[in-house]
Length: 356
Image (cartoon, rainbow, N blue to C red; front, side, top):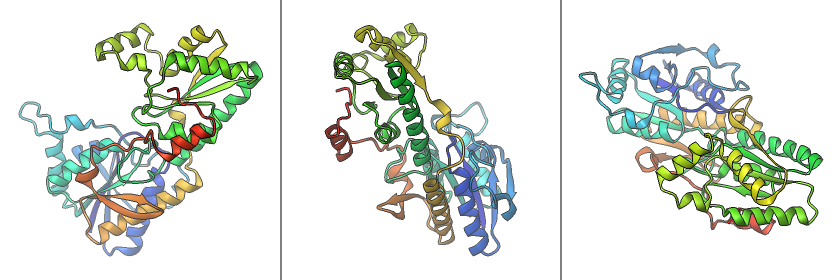
């Protein structure tokens, strides 16, 4: 059996652990298996750049951050764009899939990776997706690998910020990754005891937010810690046209959302405000114990699907059980935080403010 495997899109903790789980299952259970590891994501499949993996290549990578195969972003919208007489990227991938006589291609990636995987599936390639992203936004699965490690990292940073915020009696705006969804900010904010959590699903009101911060400090709080998802938007910004919002961001010198918010709140509250952007630290390093576990399980289950010929699907976790979703059903769909859901409701009841 010939299997291709690649890691695509942004890196995250657990990629190597999934590779290890998948490959170890294959080497232990599938007779005459060959595993082609494509380098730098879909670019490796496009350029037929790969290495044949041996058991020794994956033996000691469970704790290793990043990906031994390398990764890159190949925008989905460019996959079918034709440039002159050259074949499209999609056509190149399908051609190389056939030239290498692959039985299945396994893709470790997030939303964009899954959309491209769905395209390949429609074109007749046997594809299995494995759900990777610190955003936890892939539709149809409770959890994606890498998410819990990023939560641990962000929560630890928020707790450390609290101590310095208390020392100087400051308001701190801590930017957490999450451009379209707020799962990472919600989980890490609650785990760290943040006073305010701002997520893309809920537009915040600048005046109400400023007043809440003023009231919080007036009540005797030494500090106020605000967990801010990078994709948040105020009601004022939401009312702007795309051009108006671009112009507004340009006026701010392309500052991060936490920096812009910090400046606005400092003016409105008259309090000492500071901002911190956690950035790519949330993606790096050794995965936590849970991610090592779930990554190994997801990898092994993906190999089981390959062994049994279940193609055109992506692995998912539902209620502590591994299953799968059909690729074309979930590709392009985003799992957002339900604003009227139990998690938001209980957080509000416990005193967390969401800016609305």
